Image (cartoon, rainbow, N blue to C red; front, side, top):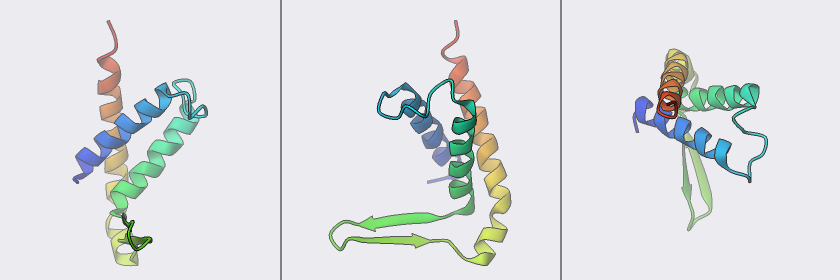
Length: 97
């Protein structure tokens, strides 16, 4: 999954959570919480941290947590957040009349 597609999934997921009743603390009116969730998602996407769960064995494997990887990909966090914000703005334009 590329940074662009991961950012699209994050924006889609946040918009879905905002519309749902089972996640009341994330809504269209909770700007600070929405931004915090977006920043955390951008950090995970940008740093290249990957998680894989083996359901049969019950093992969660997390990779990409090396110092070199974290330092190298720190700029990607900012890029990921910028892409998310751009996609969010574009998704909001579609709802305006």
